[in-house]
Image (cartoon, rainbow, N blue to C red; front, side):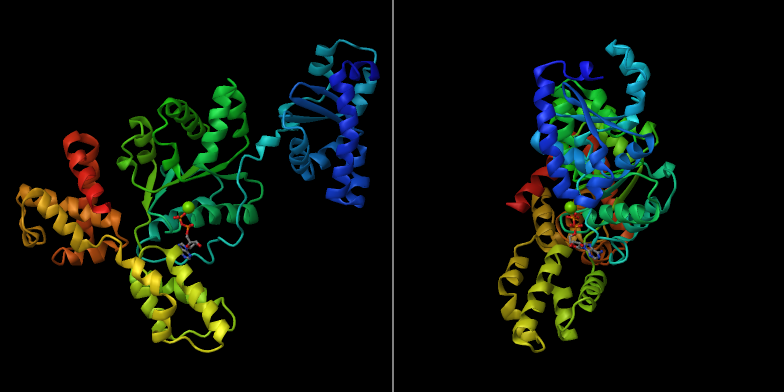
Length: 467
Ligand code: ADP
Ligand code: MG
């Protein structure tokens, strides 16, 4: 065995590093764990980017693999970034074949060298899951009901949900997409530990992906997702506009679905609104279940505030204040939470109940900022001007195409640029039903994807509203 190991300088150098690494493991895992398990590992060889270690028995190897290897891989990689994979073999197997010094044979026949033994340091591709974001503290209301139900169904299922693959969650910033993805991950980790769930941002996905393309190692990239049952990708808008890699991304994406991995993807807009996204990806995203997390409605905002307040100790806030916040902080849940925290902190500081007067003082700039958002009135005015019609016509019941089309666009933009719920929007358009708004949004999305000029109109109005 020794003859095989100390083959070159790289190896003997690493033997020394191994001793240093062992010290790190000792410190990190503590003496007891180190002594019982990790100290039994021997360094065998380093083969380019692969590190081979050995354990005395199969049992110890399995135990280390299941409990420590991922963390060890992180530690190793910190000091030796070029190491991409770690393999643990069972020592007795080497000893038995000591005399057989043909390396290839050793590797193929005698090492227990199946890919399951390999932990790629970068295999910890996922981002950490925040335990605080779970289904229990996700407040459900009119605007996020579908997204919540779909996410929960996936979390509870033991296999993929055919019609829901991929599940695409879309909504503006701060409306709870990330919360739902983490909730899925937390639920599965707690209740179905046998199912492997990985959460990562699309940006990180792309990072790994681009690196694989550069290193000409797409196989390795795919390998990383092999054991994953549920893959959660956050903020897919980040992959837009990177044309060269979109095709490859699409293949990977497709093969994951073909391999029956459940995918849940979040993004900040509906698939049809990704102007720079390739058609095939768009249609694949639309092919599963598309769940829109609409803006917030008053009831949801109130529900969220009450739920969060009930978790705060020693904070006294007048119910009128809570209603005031729900009424006035309408952009998204993140701002709503921020406002509540600010008020709560103040209440703790001064040790008395916060009333309406105080709240205006405390939240002055936050409240002013709310004024800057686009309002439905502004949208109506802009759209009416653009198409040369009157606002009164826009909100009338007229059905002629020259009125109906601008009306649909105005509804669509209201949905996209404000945080008003579908019913609220309907009301603002002369008391129309929320289904009319849904229909308008779908129609605009459809036309945007089919007619270039129409798409340009919508984009232009949108831009001018945001400027
Ligand atoms: P997004 O990913 O859509 O930008 P997040 O998931 O990060 O939004 O949500 C922003 C904040 O609002 C987080 O702190 C999240 O916990 C909270 N939040 C969003 N929606 C809800 C909800 N329905 N119930 C409770 N908290 C929510
Ligand atoms: Mg997010």
